[in-house]
Amino acid sequence: MTEKLYLETLDAGYYQHFDAVVTSVESGQVVLDRTLFYPLGGGQHWDTGTLVGPNGKLNVTEVRGRNDVHHTVGQDHQLEPGDEVRGSIDWELRYAHMRMHTAQHLVSGIVYEEFNGARTVGNQIHANGSRIDFNPIAFDEVMLSTLTEIVNQRVDEGLAVTDSVMTREEINAIMPSDRTNMDLLPRSVNELRIVQIGDRIDMCPCAGTHVTNLGEIGHINILGKKSKGKGTQRIKYDLVGSPQLRQPYTKAL
Image (cartoon, rainbow, N blue to C red):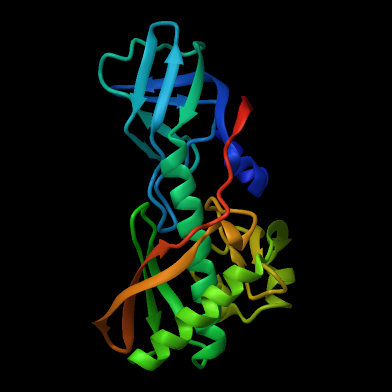
């Protein structure tokens, strides 16, 4: 199983470089003993970047897998099990995903609180724009304006984003299960990584990458809404303004 370095703490998401060992190869993909690359999952797109090994630099174009993380590097990689590599993620892409994903949590938490417990039933996180599906709800322009105003007020407050490890019982004792989407998680998983914004403005299980302060997001700009049937509506958003951007750590993990 690949050790997922970005899961150690939220702060680990700010690293750009890491050292690893190839554990297996399969066609144009390699598996490493540890990785900073985020694989596709939880609505968040994968990281891209490079691996530098004994035979030079390889571009990582796709990353997938839950247990063993497969890094697509092309058919001519010439890597073998036991080879040492240095990985580097595309920081601009990673940081865009971190900001977008934290924005999704913030929007989801506020929609739940402000609009009669409407829950998040789907999301897609991309660098240049993202979307969230809510149910049951029927947004109008006043609701979207109110949502935008409240979200951006929280961003301007610069609230902290933190993570911790909790059991299902612990999180269920604090938050309603429909808000945390506990029903979507396999029952076999008992220990969960919990991401929290401020004083429980949002608090839910998540394995994605996130910023540590809402000030890094910038303001939310809601681009529009669309009906997805049966009480479900999708909103699309991007990020604007002048966020308090951070740079990645220069040392390797």
